[in-house]
Length: 245
Ligand code: SF4
Image 1 (spheres, rainbow, N blue to C red):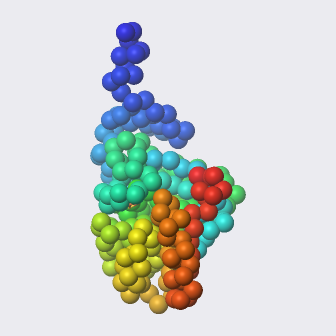
Image 2 (cartoon, protein in one colour; image 1 turned 180 degrees about the vertical axis):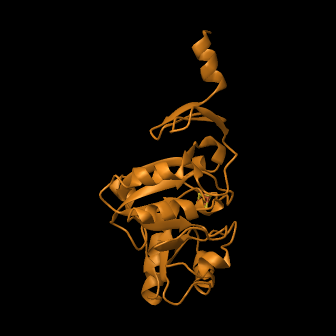
Image 3 (cartoon, helix red, strand yellow; image 1 turned 120 degrees about the vertical axis):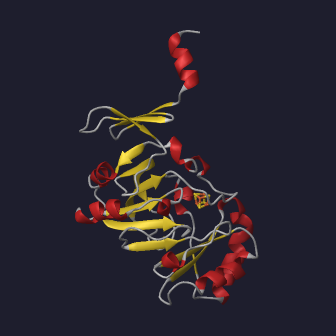
């Protein structure tokens, strides 16, 4: 085995188009400062560096803002542990390169839609004050998708709370949510959804969304439920039907 093959066995080399190289567990950052080595888990609590899993420009597929163009920022790290999670690769924050919030905001500003969706993972693990301030200073609307499992940080134009059974939402998030989106995996989730509707403000939008793998089974039940309880609306993962990220 030659030297290159040995290196490939020892490290996972990943290039991120944001001035960073990640050689797990180290990140090489090629910003204004000289090349330096950052342990992935040394995430500063001022929010200036965040573990960025991916960022992409697409159409919001779910909830209140369905159909609108937006720049998505997916942060790595989640300890909520939903068994049906479709982004399990996001769970380990150390796999995702620490990236300057300034760079993330600058990237977002290059796209026509002035709306950003911060998602995860669970983005509220981190202090999002700095990132959201940078985005808003550039005239970008800030939306978040969160389980609410951690205290609220950041300045948000729209908060979508999608609570999970495995780690309940914090009051600081529930009371400020603009949208409550409950994922329906089985019949008992309707009662669970009603319990969480009591935690949000009276003008919070209420959505029931079938969990993707159970959608054939759950969608007819959701249709019937919404017809009988019209304060709820249906949310579908339209991006999956459109085959876009
Ligand atoms: Fe996955 Fe979201 Fe659940 Fe975390 S909270 S495990 S990212 S679905």
